[in-house]
Image 1 (cartoon, rainbow, N blue to C red):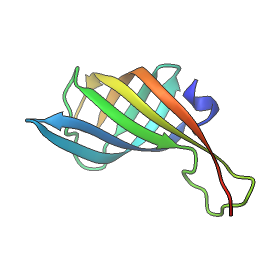
Image 2: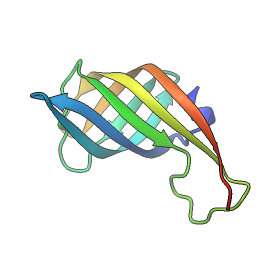
Image 3: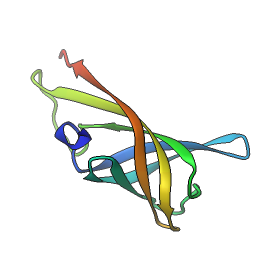
Length: 105
């Protein structure tokens, strides 16, 4: 489960297509079930219900200092928007890849 490696409250870089153009936005993310995430948009939601999206997460949200023992996890997620409104989306994870990065300072 992603929340074992990524904070439940974090930021996400979210991308999808609209009229054959790529749309990317920074959104707040809340991991609330093993395979669902709520995305909160700062201004407007550019995505549609049932749309396929990709998002990127990592565990460094809110970190003020880095040290040599920092364990960095990054996740790339493919998902579908299940519920949608102007300010948020509930997405269902289709698949994800989790990568561990060894920090060397």
